[in-house]
Length: 244
Image (cartoon, rainbow, N blue to C red; front, side, top):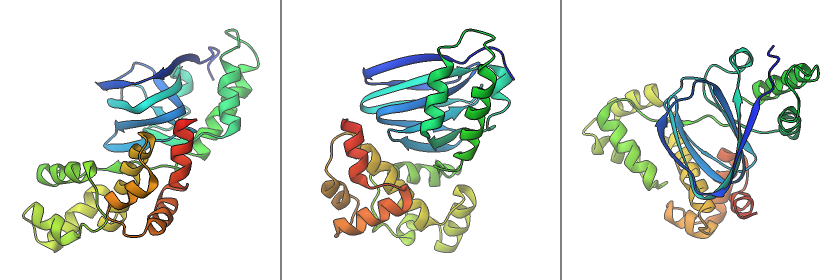
């Protein structure tokens, strides 16, 4: 337990870009509007409105917005940070979590009400910690270069044979190494990357139809179904909330 309330800072209606850096304190960031890309702990996230990310102290990370973004962040004292996940975590922020953080900022140091609020915050963060796993990239240089290029312009029609040929590997060897390094099948990773890129483009103002066609889908409804299955929400929701 810490007797020092968490601090709250605000950046409003602005574009944001931060090169690779680290903090001495842990950091919670809540996205109210727009989409923020985050790279940390070997993962990449496109974080939509209504979501929060937790970055432990000392973890190198980089972030940037896509269009205007409104967010607020909380710097977490060491004592309380020990109660939160040890790794970077992205989750959908529950109304209870948002309210507890907002209430905490108005308290004086050593306020007796801080303890129960911190209990709520820790519980809600752990409860949602598995909500949005990051997209992992292969560590091997050739595979990583290929993955980064795919990340910039993903297409559902790209086959595992095409990917293997792009890094001069056999299909069997590529499959074994890729799944070991990213922790999922190539097909699942490909869909996750498409949702990541689509989230960014929708936040920047692209239409759902254009995003679907650019990702190689001949049917917009098929794209919407895939996006909902992987991302947990409809692509139209991302665009509406980014523009709100």
